[in-house]
Each structure stands twice: as structure tokens, then as C-alpha cells.
Image (cartoon, rainbow, N blue to C red; front, top):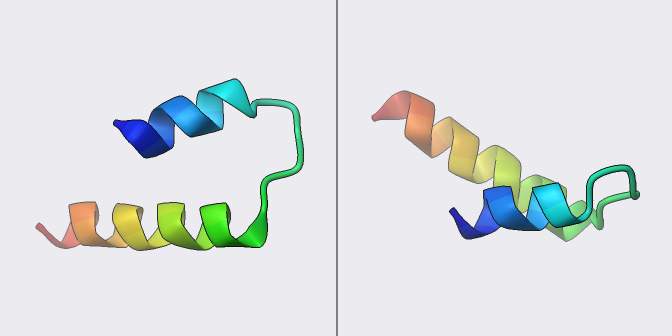
Amino acid sequence: GDLHTALRKRKGRPLPESVILDWLSHLAISLSL
């Protein structure tokens, strides 16, 4: 939820690498479950 909200707020703007990595990790975990 928080990551999705952050991405929406930052839509159209470059995302910090840390945020991208966190989102990818979250996505990978979600898919694995």
C-alpha cells in the first residue's frame, strides 16, 4: 500500500534507485506468495 501510494505521488518523476529496488522486491515477494 505505502509503496503504491509513493509511486502514484511520484508519477512522472524519476524514482530513487532505493525505491525502485524496494518495489521490485515487494513485487517479487507478492508473486511468490
